[in-house]
Amino acid sequence: MEKFITEEEILNQASKLVEQIKKDAIYQEYILIRKKLENNKEIMAKIKYIKTLQQKYIKSAYLNKEIETKLNKVTNELMAMSLYQEYLLKQKKLNDILTNFEEGLNQAFTMILENDIPNK
Image 1 (spheres, rainbow, N blue to C red):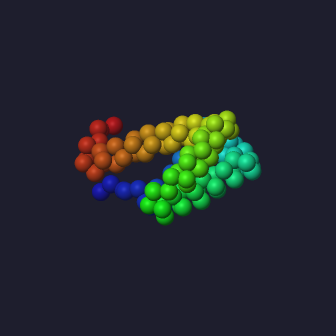
Image 2 (cartoon, rainbow, N blue to C red; image 1 turned 30 degrees about the horizontal axis):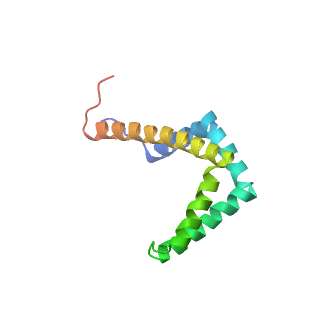
Image 3 (cartoon, one colour; image 1 turned 60 degrees about the vertical axis):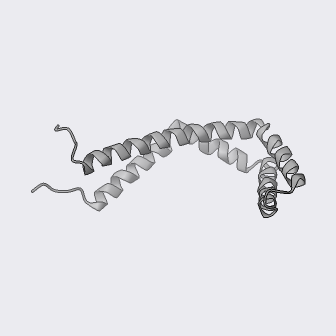
């Protein structure tokens, strides 16, 4: 009878994988830009204000045009800021990589469950 991988071994391998991701240049760039963003008071104030406006707009059942106009104006101001644009690009790049990774794992697990693994 073959030995199955233990839960501890799986967690150990998962931890190693997380550490590899954290060492990756793309992840490091994302963390660096996120810290810059979090330390930028102007950007953080706009983000907070946008969230407040969004809540008010939702409570108005999306009917308050004045709130909608303010929300669009502040959102456009935020989107025009180069640091925020850079953050969004890094975030998208990292998310794309993690999504591809997730899809690869899902395919591998599906193959395992369907017993469709090629012999070594």
